[in-house]
Length: 491
Image (cartoon, rainbow, N blue to C red; front, side, top):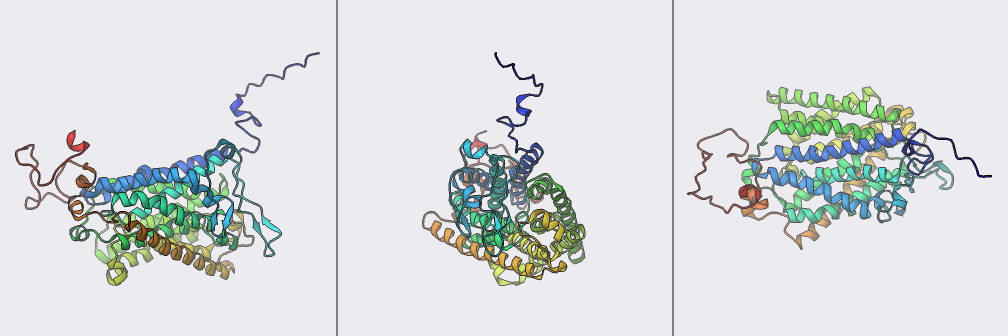
């Protein structure tokens, strides 16, 4: 007898459990949230930081600054899937580095996500304390989620060298720094490396992303050299309203930045998102109040800086601290980086000698290291148990004084590695291509570098002044004093 056909199932195949596209281990809610989180982080870069960089600089550098961010994002995506993902989250090669390899084949990408080096052992190195991380979605989701974090790190680094770095040098710098610096921090702290195993806390990138980009950006700025004197003395934003638009995308995108790092849509994710907004709002208000008290004027750009330092500071502990601790961290992140940027930067020769265009060392390195230390102080045991592989983890106020030391040591490793490796990359590149643009390009800006300009207007973002700006005219009988070319001019 022929077997009777199976009963009709009205549920479409794509939604039936146990089918090829919906394996039994897949949690659709987690997968959806993880992909949304990745998209939010991607939007922080493109268009968020593209808009912010293109509008916070002098008009003549708007195109170049935005394009540096756009190029970095694209370059990182390709490098990430070809070799860098497995160097960051693959099998262990060294205590601080994973084995390189592509993440391109479907046999790898449609399997359940797993971080093979993340198994945590007790001190005897034999008994498993926490098994390896295996989120309930495919590896393709994990690869893309981690990719956008790597991309935004390079874009943040670019903020230190806007307005003078040779674009050809930047094109080579991005894959080199991703390969030899970012992957080391990511594997050491997230992928199962020695700092991960030791119990250093970095919930979502206070060290891996912000401390590393701030230190590497400052180091790169040293090797590239300063902007031209006129730009360094006067560098007004060309569009403050667009700065706010970019900053808004950055703030709202941080829900994915911190909310996606539990690798699940769970209670800890909700805690992380709430703490992120509490700290950012507090920091913005504190920075603004300090501007009013000391300079008698509330600065919009200052408020954006305060927002960023708050977001950075909470990042290493977003899902590990309580709400009141997020407020304390916001007060600290709105005041300590403000002090280093507004006071120390102008009085300490080391800071004033290096031309860090957007002050990334203050907004990301100082705020990131501060956040890491404060996480070691305020990490709450119950919240730690929801996320960390090391059982009984706790901050200093809960009796875990050793955690503060771990946080300091972890931060110092990231600082030291980035100082050395970034310097080596810059020194090597100098033998291939100049790190700094030639003087004639520095004087003209976008039109000389790209043959394009952001606005067909006079001025560098300041109000019209007849003594400095020429009246606009279509008269072509008096040509420019420099050759003009490119798509913008042709149109």
